[in-house]
Image 1: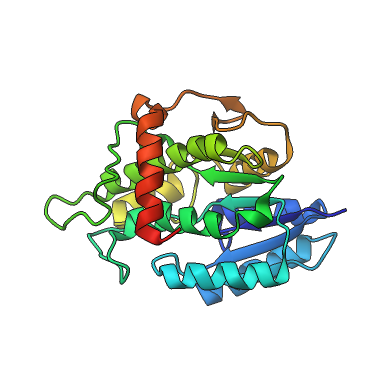
Image 2 (image 1 turned 90 degrees about the horizontal axis):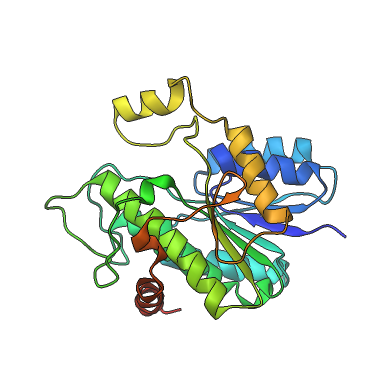
Length: 267
């Protein structure tokens, strides 16, 4: 029987590659993206690859928590049981932006929105798996559960992104402790050739640096993590469990982040 696999941030890059690969294996793939044009183009590729059920699509912008709530409601109406949720959406904001929900855009898009989405889908995910796309950029980052708003003064897009990725790792580990009926992991996809980043220099690097990982290879790792036996709560680099930065390994910080995040989004 086909698995139901939901992938956010799947209108391009790693998420799109994984969606194509899993659809080709016969899974029921649910593609979530933000930009309608890119989502439409992505769906054409995923449908062309599919060997099983017709792939489905939903649009949501994670800088709006109301859109996340609406997304969850629509998905649950169509799919009461979900085998895998790949929290892959996220990215970097070039300058300080405060969302309509009152949070700094990077922490909302990378952590608070997927945290809320996972909670809303929690019952449908019983017996299933959550895979969170993190990054080695988390190393050295500082997560502050007491402040999801920040300020424009001294804002750094890289620091904000690193903190968001550290939060992904902490979330996966804490979910493993709190939700024993759901397997939760996080992973580093590699330094992927993509449209990632802000500013001309960063975008040039992520498109043309010679040692970058392809989206197909990173997508294959995501696909593998949805399928194979994995260590609950672990952080993967490649196919190996890897110790994250000590701050991202702190269970007290993970618990505090969980409680603060739940209060912030009303989960």
